[in-house]
Image 1 (cartoon, rainbow, N blue to C red):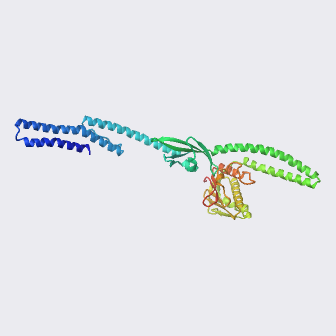
Image 2: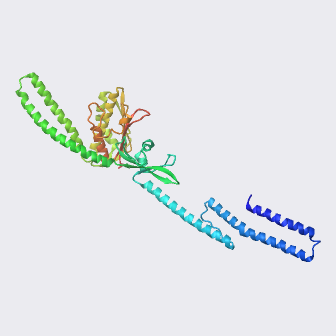
Image 3: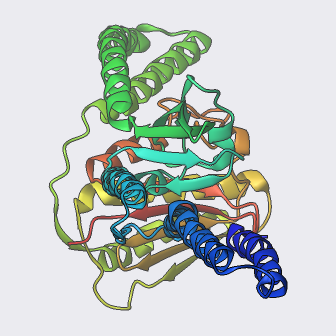
Length: 416
């Protein structure tokens, strides 16, 4: 029961006995007692009214203020009523309400600034709630494409580098913060592909230069000596052995030259080109890579009009040839009737095959320098592809879909 109702009941219980007593005894009392009872009754009413103003009015004022707090009404305030006690309570409450309003404004401003900072940050930010569910993933994190399972493997304070199917290297770190007494995890993801690729390139360029120098010098002298000695040898068996050694020396020189091609790869001369027309112009040559091996070739989107991108046509043809060769080899490895589809759509180039596919455990390593799963592979083709497309500023990926089993090499070029 509210205090106001209790006060009314108390007033009635106090005044009713006085009224009844006065009513039944007024005829027996003298004039003096009559006026005395009148004065006491009036005094009781005045005291009850003063009690109401002193006690219940401040309580009503506080109740109104609490209603404003509950409704989060920061723009209203309690007005003064001319009673010192009530006005003191109202002033204190208004000061408290003003401070809460200022703190709320600062909090909202800082929250807004933090949201803008997260949205425009060049590194990926992923924030989880206290249940571990993702609540924030900024555009940079979306572009990096990290899966939640990769992130949740990290413990607080740990960092790990991930390689994606597009050859990107992403460094992820796990941190935490306290919000309302509860610890929340958040992750920072940064694309370090450029620095890693530069370090890898510097390392393998040095190795290739030393290897090419030593092998070519040795093989040049060896081949010269063999070519000189062969005509002087009469023994047929020895001639065959020396001729095999001479042929092998040439193969070894060619093998070394393939590595040197990657080191000597020229910087792309970017210009406006028609991607569809480029693929159409190489159609016959690309078909020659697959059709003789029983692989069906299909072309899509090469006659739908210009698809202008920025690129170096000579280098892009090398990329396309290497991709189609890899697809054809994968189909032959699978041993089933194969098909390669080359599709152009605006600035997107897609090469699809139904070959043996890429095992999940190798998907993140396929663009690593010199990595290969072919029995006689050298790991040169995909390394060359990565170097050319990275120099073009293109986004690319190579993966096998778990849904249809098809392997897709997808390249997105910068629009002209």
